[in-house]
Length: 171
Image 1 (cartoon, rainbow, N blue to C red):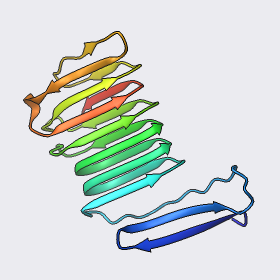
Image 2 (cartoon, rainbow, N blue to C red; image 1 turned 120 degrees about the vertical axis):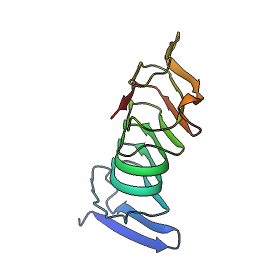
Image 3 (spheres, rainbow, N blue to C red; image 1 turned 120 degrees about the horizontal axis):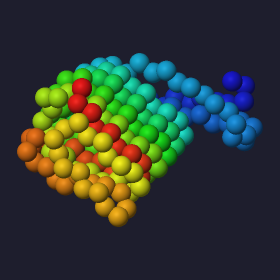
């Protein structure tokens, strides 16, 4: 830890944790285990270069990373997961009832939803296949595959855009 300085900045909008490397060497890893209170209105987790793994119950969950995977296991009403270089894996135990979007520029997306979830589904892959346990048509295209907008599951949209494989499982 003598090579890095960990800076905590608390404000009204949340807690920001920053790591500064004192020696200018980019080969330093710092892992954080944070306990985020459940039942928050919004749980927003952001990382520039690292994996985000979260479990819990939140009204709204926002997870974003530039270079790393996102794993979520729990419950939320609405949410968004976004990564540039990484995979997104989301397991929602209770029926999904709100808006959710998942995006990965370079990686796959795996969503495991309760069979009783109500949602509209719209999504596209650029360079990957789509596997889906739900009764929705998948169109195979010249470059990738897509789901058309499918409103029959409910009123709230479930969106994804990915350059890798998409797996949508009914749990």
